[in-house]
Length: 344
Image (spheres, rainbow, N blue to C red):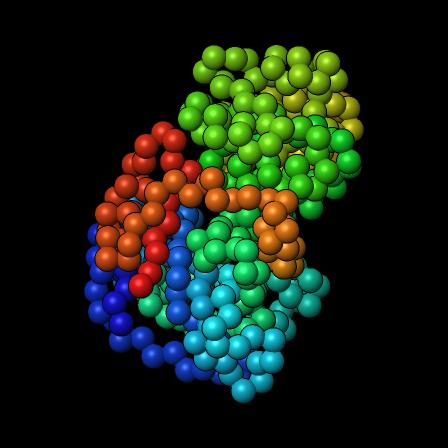
């Protein structure tokens, strides 16, 4: 089958690969419909590795995906051919201690699409466990379904933040993850989100999606802006979604006494935190790694109309222009949030 393959750092192409995937009794065969390009895909494309995960042999890219069921295994009862599904890309070992404790996203043996050496989904069809394939409501398109994966990160972060109705949150970073985190925080009960970034077009987009106050840190002091918007008290929650080491300097100053912070973005190098500043306010700190047990709730919010991800889709490329799509996503226009590839 034709697939988008990363041969090595900086070299991708559409090529024919002979991939034979057997359909197990609890698997489904899925025609891939839409795939989002994630920052990790671009990182592998540009650098050939992320931390200990190194591309040592050709690998198919893509993990944000939705598609249509073609065939079901003998023991699958909740899905049928024709059902449209969003696919959770990480498959853990069900017998690992992490999985048995309910934290399957932390299983070190998890097999995650487009993480070396596991192939991704930029190909016509895949075989996937039915238990990690979630049916989409009729009101949710396949392109929206491909956004369930990044939305799940924001939902997981919002859950970790233990939002109380009426809370004010700060989201640092207006990329895809920052914006979906803001939407998840609002859906979870926040009355307002203050979002900081350097790129005004992304801030402008975010401000149209709900009670989101944009702060361009090129023009405004973000700490002064937060203090002004919270009457000097500080935010209840900070979501760090940029992964910027600089953004973490003085990050506890944004919070009210007893506030909470959730770390989402991943710095490429170790970041310094002022622990004494956190202690002086009794700040609660949490971190997330991907997500667990989130897809059904994310899909339910999208299906209900409470959460609209359609405005985040900035550019769409056909599968035959996948290389062009990656070249664009590696150096996008300032207002670009999510680039997707559609199949068929």
